[in-house]
Image (cartoon, rainbow, N blue to C red):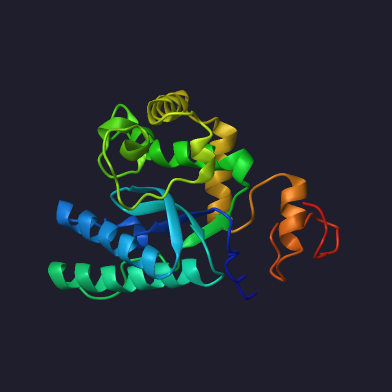
Length: 232
């Protein structure tokens, strides 16, 4: 069976995961991480993609991003992926693929999952046992939102501004939200939706998405015919 094309629509936040082939490391030095961030910054501007959050782990990375065009996100990821593989292979004296196939991604419902997805992303290093708290990790967007540093890669989503009326209030609210963590159900939903490519949200959100694309946005229930406008 042919695989489905990626679900990509402009104006919606997308949760993106790119893994190393066979879970191998994709970074050897600090400079490697800095170079990938530079590529993301350059190509996000070029292809009109707002990156709201990210984390660079040893063998994969996550993005939360909103493209302004239907081609922006895949064009950005293709450009970044190709350039980084050339760079990494040249430095490491290796050849062949670095990535575990194509990147995985899906759309998420903003009001229900965007802030949870940001916390999920920023807590990756904590879950992996690399640090005790999100603020101790240098390679994520957490520091920007918590007021620890300015990160030029980050474009805050409008929903972030609703966390408080002042920068200090927003930073404190975000830090507390991340400290509180995400539920196990949210964690599973955010992971599985990105890896499977099915949209993540309430029934009405998913049904409204389906009206905008020929690509099926949710897994069909057993015994039900596929319909472009059917509920999830």
